[in-house]
Length: 349
Image (tube, rainbow, N blue to C red; front, side, top):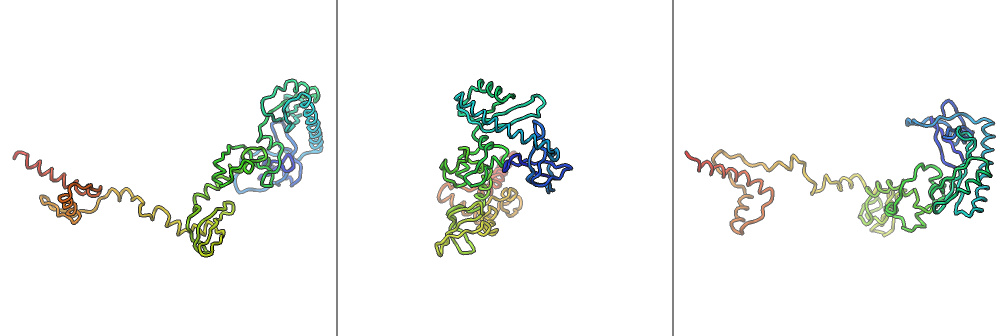
């Protein structure tokens, strides 16, 4: 069985093994972390899945009243730490932006730990800031600088598509994204249209790229004449999410969206395959085998075929002519037999 929890409302989902517990949607449960069990909300009740999934962390059970009071107190401490950190950064005049705050009170090596995540355009000397933070918060301080993508993941937001950011909901790792992926998806190379909230190329260009590659490999390219249920036409566009092809009909000139299966029928795919083309290579056992030659009795010259007579007449009348591979294959056995007879005539009796 598998269940899903979230530490924040509309935040990233984390999957757990419920074990003997059966929480319902909206219940508070304890989730094991590196800093000890933390309180999270169940957003996906335990249910059976068809695939065998292993390695999931085990749920520590339903959160008690003490756990809920501790979680609420930590939320207040995080809010106070954010206000104090912003005020001290402003006093020191540092080019830093506070992105997130974590408060840890269950780590065995420290009593209380405040982790401050910040973003900055370059490296910052924050030694004086750490001393003032430790004095103001009365806890151990850790400052961690994050990049633009991690900043968008921690803060969350709405993407250009109108949905929650992928990095803040379900993406686990950041993969490299290139402009070539935008070209393959026929997107305008305008940085304002292919960039996300972080100012970098959108992550969806990466995990949607294999879908476009598969579609372009099987669908007819733009400008290809095709047959559709509405009549013959020419492909003028593709719509990959809906798996359709835009065709301009030759009879009426109007455009219609046809399914890729209608345009690329099995018969058309069979006729376009390499197995039915005239230039397809023959199998090795058939390509190596030469044409059948009539058997001749030993000591008699082979009867010339019409093709060999044409070759000899051409050589005598028009001089040397370039022979094909098939003609050379036919002449080699006769040349070897002629040399064999000459060797036997020159040998002493």
